[in-house]
Amino acid sequence: MKKIVTFAAAFGLMASMGTAVFADADTTTTTGETSTTVSGTSTTVTEATKLVDEPLIKASDMNTIDTIPLILTENTPFYFEPGGKMANMLAPQTVFSTGNRVTDIIGNGEWVEIYTWLGKAWLHVVPAM
Image 1 (cartoon, one colour):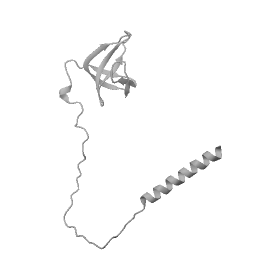
Image 2 (cartoon, rainbow, N blue to C red; image 1 turned 180 degrees about the vertical axis):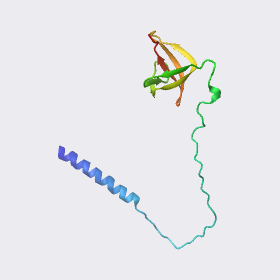
Image 3 (cartoon, helix red, strand yellow; image 1 turned 90 degrees about the vertical axis):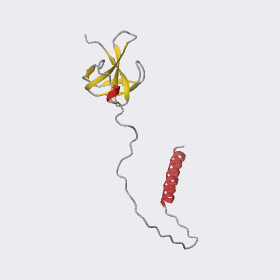
Image 4 (tube, rainbow, N blue to C red; image 1 turned 90 degrees about the horizontal axis):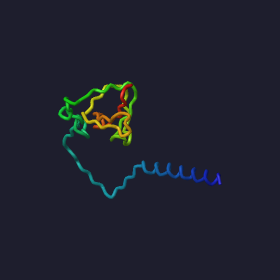
């Protein structure tokens, strides 16, 4: 059985290498002699195309009245919604809340909405003892 699997793997590898070789080969066909003269100039665009408008979070989106700075002292997970799927991790830094807060159902803290590079997200904040 091992010999059959080894043979099938080797045959598949050889077939894929052969396909790659023939795909890169230049093939030209001529049906007659024609020539075309092209004249003109070309320009090179050096400005990159932006995929999203910058910045993602504008100054007008921030509510400075209710904005509370949160100082993260260790790697902290943040979530797309309170108690939901984890979005990513934040390194130690200062982040700012949007002013939205939700009390945790269990009662061991609260969820605070913050601004991140992915947009708005939620942190679980446990009260200090």
